[in-house]
Length: 520
Image (cartoon, rainbow, N blue to C red; front, side, top):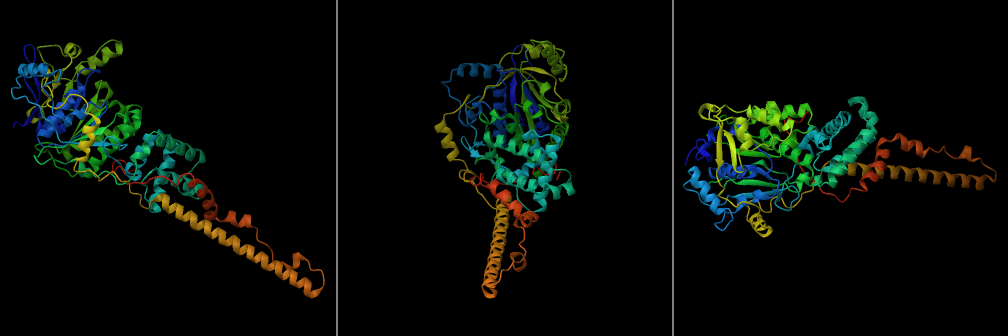
């Protein structure tokens, strides 16, 4: 077996065969092109190639097409003859059909194993991005995380964070002296955003058992890397949730994996489909963190491949980190399109045989302009390339087949049952209940004292036969309202109990983006 993955080649008018060298596959890459030009098939053949060489893969199935990696292609497919002709043209003489070992994941737990993290692992920076918070609201969220740390309260799921925000709101006067102003308006805005996120299904992301990264690195009995497929067709309805989750996962890999230098092949290849969603309206601090991850994670043995319609979707500093490029056709209908096309062509090493800008505009479906790293990491000359046909099934699989594959997975049953252990919600609920009991006992004692005083007054009247003034015979009554207002715990107990009344039926979970995103 060669030390590279065969991408494609050419016949007359095309370039030399193109191989993605495994030793440089962790130098990252870009797959770009307009809708319908063949990006998904390119992603599919790369996943097949990495898996065959023992490299696990993680990718998102945005349209449902990539689930076909789990099934071998068939000779009765309508494109079978075209596949054979393409294989003969590019010199792929050993072309055959075959499936990959696949693990299905789904944030909603419907089309794969549930995949979760915890509020703590997500961290305040990414949560602020996910919730679209202002700077002031992000500051309040950071205070809440600091309070959770100091009080040793685990933040596992959304109800933990919601309960903690109630606590911070009740104690805002005291906390404000230590951390700065905490406005009820900011807390209310965060709570509303959390409700929106919950309505979008985001609460399914947070809980336990949380994802163990080791489960993304599995191989089968034959040594082939498992292809981890995240069902993202439903998730894409909440694009910010989709992008934030993938960024969290990438950051966790960076944080947890040890340094390996320059391995002979990657430990994992991560495909970030619809990459433009990551950078749209992203604050500079977040883009800087992504750039840092892209620059440093290759030393952990992880290759990151951004998949998007236009290279201009990726910031210039990050684009410069992507050494392996497959550029499908770009259409130039507007002035902006022409500028983007010219800019895309400038990112390739010139080939004297053709004009790169013209080639990017003219290549057909299943063709691309490629530039792959050569020995010593030198960028290859741009070539017009016919992309090889996939060995696995082109298109989705049926629900019954998916269910059977999930049932046979080595992870079957590990993540399906939610675990709800004690965390911030339960701790604050217990505190509120204890404070309520203390308040009730104090009121009962006060009532008993008043009753005793009344009995003494009545007895004194009977004994003396004279009129006794209540004001002189009865002990001064304490103002129950003032005593309760003096008790922070009692006041919080009542307010918090009201808040908890609407949340008592929800689930819990695990997890902080690590050193890059803690900011704690």
